[in-house]
Amino acid sequence: GDRSGVGHALANHRKRREGGPNAPLNIGIIGLGVGMIAGHGVPGDSIRYYELNPAVTELARAHFTFLKESKSKTEVVHGDGRILLEREARAGQKRNFDIMIIDAFRGAAPPMHLMTREAFAVYLEHLAPDGILGINFELDTFEMAPLHRGLASEFNFDVRWFETPPMENCDNPVSWALYSKDKGFWAAPDVAKAASPWRDGAQTKLLWTDASSNLMSIINWRSLF
Image (cartoon, rainbow, N blue to C red; front, side):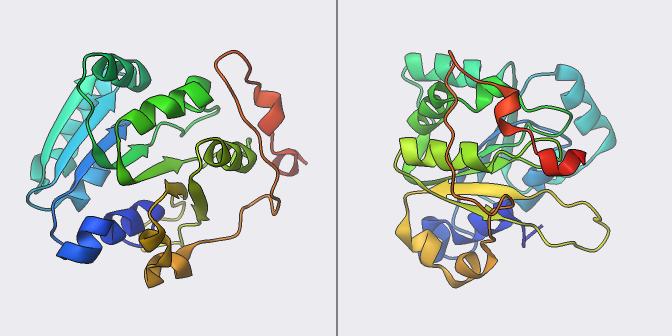
């Protein structure tokens, strides 16, 4: 929805702050789902999905209309998103995404290889200098806030948490962490107003690497008792 973290990213990217609500954006997304984010696209937008499971794409095209009715140009490529992005970077095909969205975290556990220092280095190779990185970490069992703060510190990004308010016909909305170096984005009135306190109420930092990551380090013990 428009009041979600992704909604604020789409509405307040520098290109749209300066060029109006229909200024075209180049958007990359790991995780297709049913293609709902494509429903936010405007003419001129380009949306490139990275989806691991071809059966998900078949379902999204057969039973949902977000991709079919999107006003933007959309494409879906199949494979592990991180691996595909690594291959594209090595081939000199840096995507220069204005907004990059990691939306692969619904379920019992996060894909750990998408949340390491090395994974973030890959994302940032494809993110424009004033771009916005949005990550969904709606996981009751795990508290990923320290990990987000640690990754932001490692790469010198500002990061904020955006708790999505309940919306009509959506009892369990997805909330987001947004990263950006664009000071103007954080100063935008809607963005500043929407930013929420971290769920853990802390400022601790944690950094995973490909060589060292542990789900025990992010267990949300409050949710278990």
